Image 1 (cartoon, helix red, strand yellow):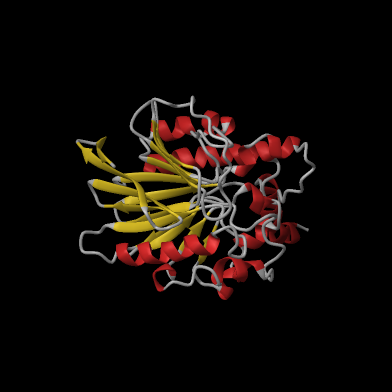
Image 2: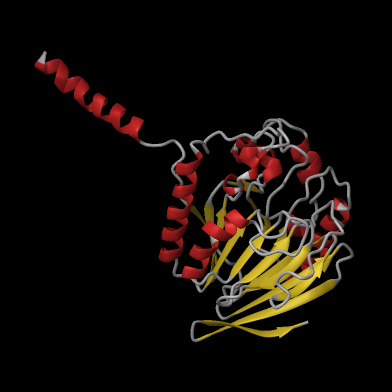
Length: 337
C-alpha cells in the first residue's frame, strides 16, 4: 500500500494543482522582431476593420498600403482587429481567410509578418480559429494572439485583447453569438490581463512603449470613447508612460492626445467600410489633432529618439503627419502637418 502511494502521490499533486489553475490565465508572450536597418529603426503600417473580400474599397486601401510599404521599407504590418466580417471565421478552413487576406494584400512590400488582435466581429465567429497555428500553414504572415508583445528595434508593442472588457457584448441585447472560449469566467480573465499588462509594461526597458487594442479609448467617431477600456486600461498606460495607444473599431482615421502626459491616441479603422458620417465634434476638442471619416491606414517609423506617424487616405495621400521626439525621457510633439 505504501509503495502504491509513493507511485501515485506525484500524480495526485499534479492533478490537484492543475485543477486549481484557471484555464484563462494571461501571459504576454514576446516575439522578437530584429531590425535590419543600421540605425535599429523600425517602420510598420497599421490597418483595421478590413476583411470584406476586397469590397468597400478594401482592395484600394491594400494597393496604397503596398506603395507606402515599399517606400518606407516596412518591417511588418499591424492589424487593429475586426479582421473578418461580419462574423469572423467559421473555422481554419474558411475561404474568407484567403479571399479577405491572402488574395488582397498581395504587394511584395506587404509580404512581411502581420501581427493582429481580435475585434468584436472576430469574436462573433470562431475566435479560436483565428488564433490557430493552422492559419500560418496557409499564409505564414499571419500572427494572431489574444495578448502578446512584439519587441522591435527601440519599441515594445503590447497587443491587448479588449473585446471581453466591453459590457454590452455580455448584456447582448442584439442576441449576437460570441465565442467566449478561454475567456470565461470573465472576471478572472480581465483581472489576469490587467495584472500581466501592468507587469509587462513595468519590466519593459524599451525607449518606446506602444499598446495596440481593438477598441477606442478616446474617439470623436461613431463609437466614441470606450468607457470600460478608459476605466481599466488607461490608468495602467498612464502609470507606465506609454507613448501611443493604437486602435481600430471606429471606421475612420483619427489622432488625439491624452489630457494627462503625452500619450497619443491613434485610430486606424479605415481598412474597408467607412463613412459613418457621425462625428462628435464637441468632444475632446482641446486634444483633437486630426479626423478623417473615410478609408485609409497609418504608418509609424520609430528610432531611439524620434517617431514619425503618417495617415494616408484611400488614394494614398498623406493627410496628416506628426513627429514625436524624446528629450530627457519626455515626449515632445515637435511638428504637425
